[in-house]
Image 1: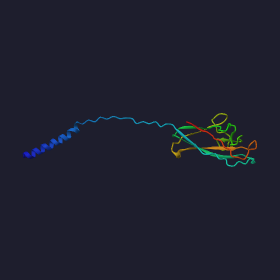
Image 2 (image 1 turned 120 degrees about the horizontal axis):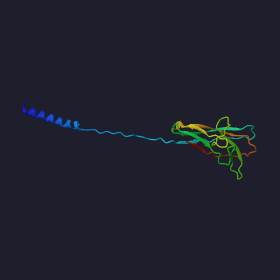
Image 3 (image 1 turned 180 degrees about the vertical axis):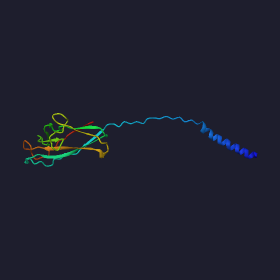
Image 4 (image 1 turned 45 degrees about the vertical axis):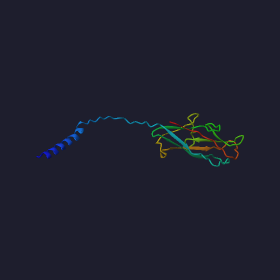
Length: 174
């Protein structure tokens, strides 16, 4: 072998040795870490207007209508929906709508948990019942729809022809 070839071979082996040396002597340290999150229990609620329309005081029967309360809660979150007596001085035995006259006229009505209209929807006091459910998730398509069944009974006294209203507060406990 000539010296030139030997020198090239030695240089090549030395270069490979230098490149290989860091791979042989390199060490790797590892660790792990946890990733966590807690999904909060949360509920949102919305409701549509319960519009009875025109009430005929000469009718021998009640006027029934319904509306919807939509509840969105985190999945598997149990909830209870309560309704108050309204903002016009009614009771659970008889909620009242009022007109805007200086001496307000009233129109009796009530809200129920079923289409049979036998259990008043309230807060669990005075013989009323709240309505419960379980959350399906927070997406709009996962809302739990609860039907409010309203009734204006035959009125015990003559009522003037005017517009009556009340405001119900919906509370969701979860």
